[in-house]
Length: 469
Image 1 (cartoon, rainbow, N blue to C red):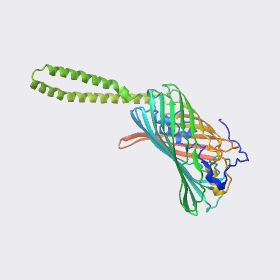
Image 2: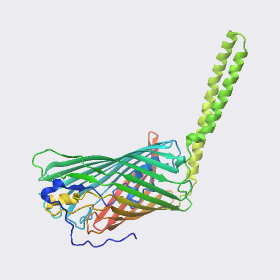
Image 3: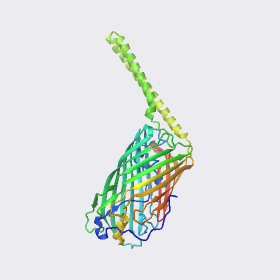
Image 4: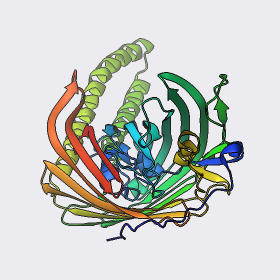
């Protein structure tokens, strides 16, 4: 076990701000629970070193350029869709301040993403969107209720080198936040925030070695606050809103007969030998034709012979193009057979450390911001120190080519002084479904998956749909 959940101390750390001077405070947007695509959450968030597929974009910026073992074409793609239900039950302490002071209603977390790969290059976008209503626990139906809507987007480009031994990626992390209030069925927008920051990542995967190393860094995103401008604002405006920097470091080790880092075969490189042979044949043939035409003394004979040679050349080139196409198809079948013949039995162990930067000295948590105004509670200082979240995940395939399972655990740090961390346990699975393609395009074998994330005063359950490999 990484650690254990511990009882919370009874002495709070009050913020230097007070409810009358919230405009001088910063909202710390740090979120301790893992809110990520299904596979990453099932592994306890330890996904930076695996870094394969669109799901990994949120864990490692280099993931867009990492070629999966099943990727056999020069052009490839991946998509993902998922939904989860954090804070499904009562008695939820989402921000881990040790107090169950709010009721979370209609808490939904969505993910949607896609990526394309062109040879060594990759391009991807992954978005997640969360929305929940929050009101003081035990509040009446007519009490003032806050609604938080938070969206995050990763837009990345990456490139692999030396047939996948090293992959790097870079791009941006964009964040948008809106806070509304509702009372007696009257909704009003209180503030909005939009920001953007760079991120960069890398993955090292030596050919046929059973290990990988991954890392990614995301710069902080802050400020750019805008109020609704409506009269009668019910919430005070904070001075700023900040998402701290993140440094994600991971390692992966795989045991079993299945290779973790097979050498990626570039179709263009494989076809180059056939293509070069055809080009050499064409150059020799053209040289011979020129020599033959030069030996003809009569211009009329030369023109007539050239027409004959050009006519023959069209058919010869057509046959050569067909030969190249047949060779390409044969090489593609060889690459697919290579992947299909690998054994599927394996256990992948993933280790990770997520480092989150500190907030401003006058920072408070989002729930504390709501609490000071909706419930009249005091403000708690948030994010005065760097936070560390160690993570561990294991993944295997107990029923080959049908069922994949994963388990994980991670320590969620508390951003509040004199509050102790809590341990999460995660579980996940994917089940193979059927093959489907729209008008024979984007034909895939599909899968459905699910996961759970359980901790003291917190639960999260979700489902996802994607391609089976």
